Length: 587
Image (cartoon, rainbow, N blue to C red):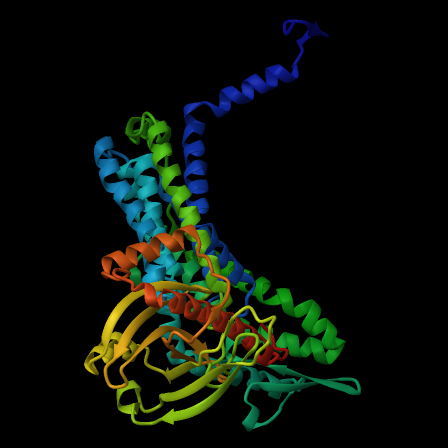
């Protein structure tokens, strides 16, 4: 039937077109593309939540907004660097590929399962999950494409480390204020030329009043929107370009410095344009229409201009050419990994485990933002209590400042049940809470609870690590106090909190309950995710915890863990209620 002709031309039936399409897709050239898309899909699945939070930052008003570009840039760099070099030796060994690649992926998954339990909220505060991403990607490339391909892609894989926020936050904190002052200085120079806005005064630095007709509105230029995000974004993009650019390092550094100055100037102009638009066409046009996209447009124009200016700086782009002596990529990949089914099976199985482990990191969203910024206000400033319970401060301790820092505080609180029959947690016992607030988180490990109890001669009956919800892990322990001749149960945890000025501090919250036969409890148990439960078991086994739990204290421990979970949930609610509304400012 396919040989029938109309007007001397053979008919192009749908089945014929489909057959030709399948032939092209199955060709050796497209085999590399299929493997690349498969490897990319498996990596995205294994780290879907981590990558989603990075992309989410592109819309956020933060100095690290452009970190979401790092995975995208890494993929583009990989596409440029993946071709074999001319005269590259064709040496391949599948055993070596699995010996190197599989442990990398297993180590990345073990890190994502075990470290969230060990580090608790500090894991997401420092975004340690992003350190495991390059390791898993390296292992995936090694198993699916071979170790030589991994060596070829070493720069794109290493580039993924630049998505880790901690080095930026550590560095930016030191010069963010100076950068904001320089931006405001440049803006004030322009405002002297064209008086489209007026500074509110030295006491309100960065606050301007824009007049439009008979009305005026305030515009705040805060540190988060001073343009440092554009500088970070340009550094990331320019570093990617410099890996494929030919030219001397001095020329490259001059080009990079000129680009940074251009980004700063463009950002000052961006803020001025918003103020200018507000004075001419009103607040709605400036803030709602112009403000959301002008920053991205100007940033892209600056990047494009710097790319076009590479030649005047003596730089040129380098792309690998298909020389006659070079092995075609499709042939090289087939030689390196002739059979892919086993490799895909190994990576897919590990990616499924990674998907489960990465999904469990969603719990951190209760207490920390996508970039690890604390959401919770200090318990010392706004103490919370579960439904039906009353909390009151009963004591202040000042003798511990030499241990936890001169700026530290130690408050003691008392929880009592109010008798609400509908409360999910009920008890006739008194819960005591000690809250230590400090700027130095290392003091909590230096002066730990267990070491303190042993120092005072307390006998520890049992200790184990537990999940308290919101990504918070704590320790529950039962001990005997020989001084008062009484048994106690304690749950404690650490977490970062935010101050009214935006700085991060740390708190250790300890809940204590006296074990007596007269104490009664009522409450529903809490559950943990699969990955979290596995991490808890590993932590308790490796640290020799969770053994020899006395049945006499099991009910008290269960209730106190539930109580701690309720306190954390309520503290998140309180933090949302006391959050200060943000004013308008150009982003």
